[in-house]
Image (cartoon, rainbow, N blue to C red; front, top):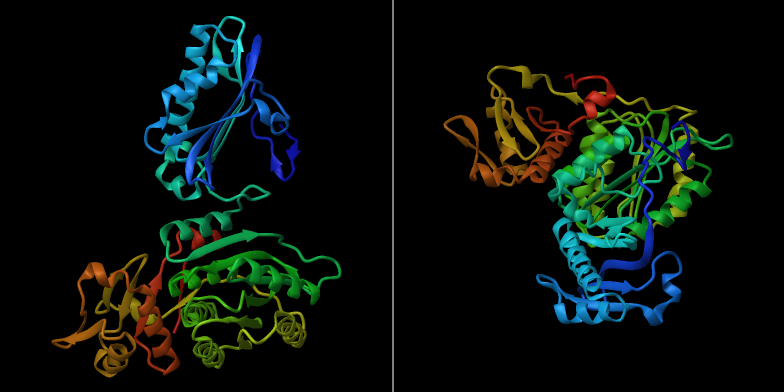
Length: 439
């Protein structure tokens, strides 16, 4: 129990009764991508090397609702030289395989071997199941903590990130920690934020070739909300000892890049970023996205530079190295976010949104009303001297990204009194502190 398999510690040892085996069979359920239908693969012989015994392997097509046809199952089992009783039992095992796979929404369900014991019983001697990632949330009975294929036990920060992904399905957010320490000859740990798998890999190569060690892999793609990008950025910056923040993806993403820029801008301001950030936001509205980053950089003590799809990852990685060198070894220390003081005022106006709430300074409302109404796109308006939602509460709750935009634009314009608080369950506890309240 003290040993490790790869990076996984052995937590339990399974001791099973030895089975007296008479015969072995191979039985597998899979989703056939070619036919877009479930298929059962059956062979009268289990163990390894099933791929080399194609001639004796039967593929049984299945109706997605009803499963395999009884006549086809009977034909497959009839060729095994079993007694009628055992053939019936085997056919029943095939049907049970489909039912079990259907129940848990499996992508694959392999029994190898399915054995016939000497006392005439069919037993699944070994079984492997792959559950569809998107079905995991519907099956708490399976106790799958994180539907991710990590090469290590999930870290506390990965658990926080996975909860964010499960609570907001607008776009993709993938976060994996890679290391907590830079190599001996490395220029330092980098918080990596990609967008799109292939482009992210190319960008990771660029930053590694520039002499850095990547602390994490993060991907926010598929048209993520500004709120999702904000949460991703805060999770990346929950890692200590970073020398900089490097964001770069495919450069041709079909998603509005300004949403990502607004999410990053909010996170960088809340955490008072003091390490360099180089962000390549290639794709739709990239010019607007770069401008947003340039504007928020003026509010912070660290350089934040935005780049477009025409800027090669290797080029911006070299620029990143220059900025880090200028910082003379400064390293990031995770911290609580800063929040405005007015949220503690008893007269403050609060409106709930999905995963958070809007705070509006009621005392300052007459002065900030015009800016808030404009930058919120009319989502918040004045009613008898009080800020209110202009749309039903259920609809307003889904406008978190638009309200995040409003907050950032108000701040960039020097307008205080509007704040969007977005929850990240478990993050403050992980950092060992509650959110700070600052001016």
